Length: 84
Image 1 (cartoon, helix red, strand yellow):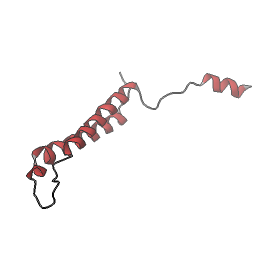
Image 2 (image 1 turned 90 degrees about the horizontal axis):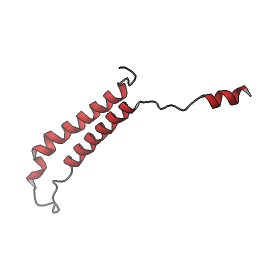
Image 3 (image 1 turned 90 degrees about the vertical axis):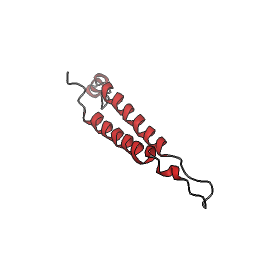
Image 4 (image 1 turned 45 degrees about the horizontal axis):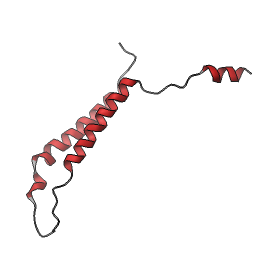
């Protein structure tokens, strides 16, 4: 009988707050955008060189976005949502 009351009184809670999840989604979007910007630039014919593979977007911008996204993810995990 006491166990039923304890189970009824406990309410399931999430590990993170709403604020944490917002930052996690922003971080995931940054990571996905970075990987999307890295894609492409190859050549259909292996005998033809395509210089687009060394474009600044694939070399500088995309990896930077991925690292920023991972930084946002770490921040979202460590963020205390109860702090006002």
